[in-house]
Image (tube, rainbow, N blue to C red; front, side, top):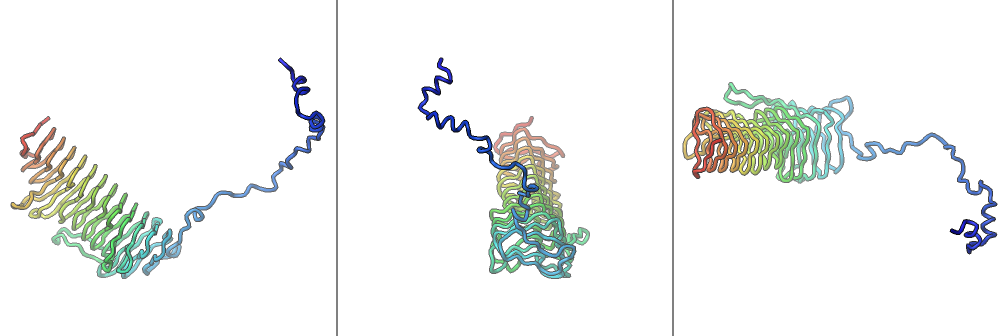
Length: 357
């Protein structure tokens, strides 16, 4: 096999240029000094550079008047808000992100008025708003001994449109908010909105109303606890309304509780299409036809659900692997498969397809 010398002799590469390159000093190929000219500089960007946020309020001080947001952007609360009238924060713009930063919005209004956070007004339709990480406190209390009376000072609504708002609040996202003691709705949103990881307690209206509700609680509500298209991993409780949970489509792994007067009609949990892994209870003992019977759980398809009620435990067109607890009708279904009963109640299967395990 030819060696390297043979290769060099036969190569078309000019020999004089080859030896000239060999003769160049090594320094001719140096790239300069490798010694740093100074300490390394910071190359990371701050959070404000990545997501510049406008502070609301004054650090270390309590704001006592309504804060209005009328421009798109990202905002962060830097102190508590306590108002004696009106709203805590009014959002009058689209495309707003509001971080309450762990602070509290409260009201001492002697007669309930305003919203903890108001969404829009008569002139502004709010879209694409996100609210997170804080508390809204108000003074409404519930007195069962006085006939289920909700009364007290503070806000009318926790988060929602004000009474002067004729526009819809659409595409709203609410996360990690706790609301206590409002005279009407706790959280009220409309199309394409979602509420997650929120708590509402003691409200003189609906607890949480939104298309999708997940990982949330609405307790001690005059109207339904949760009203939604779909509900996941949540609990709703009403003391006089139609249902603890009232869902239009699907309810999963959730609990509806109704502790209403014994002569009123309602349901613990009502999921109009599918309920899976749910619990529902209702305390109604007196009802009259032609009103639909009160029940613990009602759904077209109920699977792995448990319902408790003096009248009907679980009611559905199809009840699969459900448990009914009632002295009246424990399971009421067109087709009941693998269901069980307690409380001495009967079972009915109108289509004649009833299978006990």
